[in-house]
Image (cartoon, rainbow, N blue to C red; front, side, top):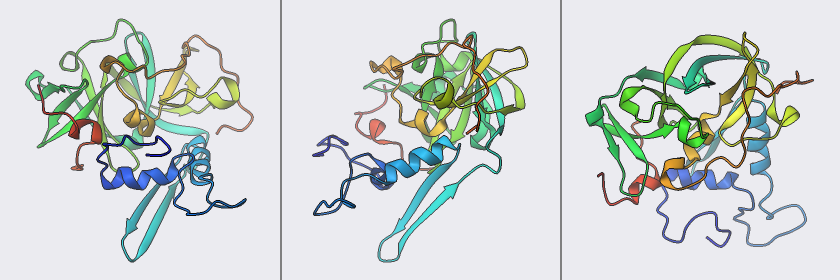
Length: 254
């Protein structure tokens, strides 16, 4: 709270508490020295692993210790992905994150009193993410039940549902780093060049899970990139779980 990493009235679940160790500036040390206690370290570890297209998770057990799991792609250059359309834009969803896709029933989509939406899937409410709202895509399908949704799972087994206009198909893509060619974009892990020469951005499921929906009054995209922008080849290409805090704090579903 002193570091403004969480709100004073926040009620964090276990996964959100564990995740604080990766926050920049966070430290549990009572004293700060030149080499420890500064809150620098684990955030750097996560950032570099994410830059490689991987992820890091932790599973602590009281009195027994903590298990850290590093997942790194066997090849950093090629990704198995699902090409999806949102308005006139096309994005790549990592195939390993996809659980299923379907057309939701209108009765199963609910708006939250504090903003945002959830969809009811087999006994649980899961947060809906509209890519068109986060990235400011025009001419996209405005409501989930008129399009398709893709249920995806992030590194800590948390689920979100992504709203898209169309599933175009599965394909392998060559990853090109935005860090080397443009600038980091929240919710995007990289880019690729499609067969028609256009640029398609590769979605980062873990970052999307943490981003607020643009429709709820928050600006979730500090920068944009046009799919007509040319990206040069890089030299080294780089659950049944409880609903997250933003839903727990709402009084209910409207």
